[in-house]
Amino acid sequence: MTGPLRVLVVDDQQIMREGLVTILDLLADVRVVASAGDGAEALKLVAKHQPDVVLMDLRMPRLDGVAATRRIVAEHPACAVVILTTFGDDDDALEALRAGARGVLTKDSGRDEIARALHQAVAGHMTLAAPVQDRLLAAAAAQPLAPVRSELPDGLTPREGEVLMLIATGLTNREIAERLFVSETTIKTHINHVFSKIGARDRAAAITYAGRHGLV
Image (cartoon, rainbow, N blue to C red; front, side):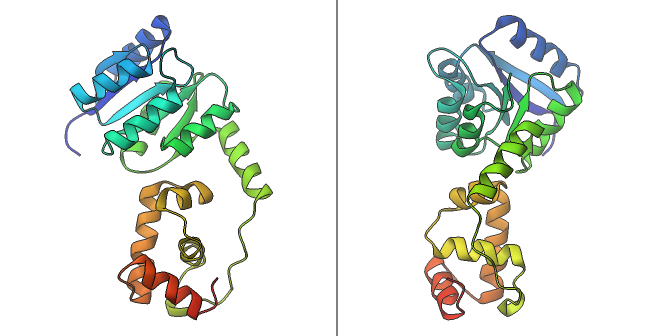
């Protein structure tokens, strides 16, 4: 992208909101286009200003960060969302990821860390605070994926094999991204590689291929 990153800051605490605006405005490659005090106001400002990314608080009146994230992702898919929360082990942080957020940071994060997460989100990558990563890893351990065969046909990598297996179970791109704890953009890239390698034009063909090669 060209020009500075266009950011909307959302937090119900005025002092926190104004502080975030101030520190982000000091960055040459970031421009805060607006700020909001709750999720409902954020939705209006996203529609008005079309920011590249929203830095979103979790706990807010009228419309919280999870619900606002879900609406923004559905109504403005070009706009990324990064969650900023007081506690990284908050269950709502995981719900925000399931709603489509591309990152979760805690409010003790530094300016550079926040800026890096915003840029990563716009590029389709995920940034997670350590407590959030720990929660996700624990969830993955509790629900392990079925093992992928060591030898895969047509040059498929182990990760591509996992993605193909999850396609065959009927999961959507977003559900696969949540299961593997990566961004939806990353899953789309994996799927493109899988389809190219196996010669599939659509998911139905991929499912047929998976069944034919004993991957499901």
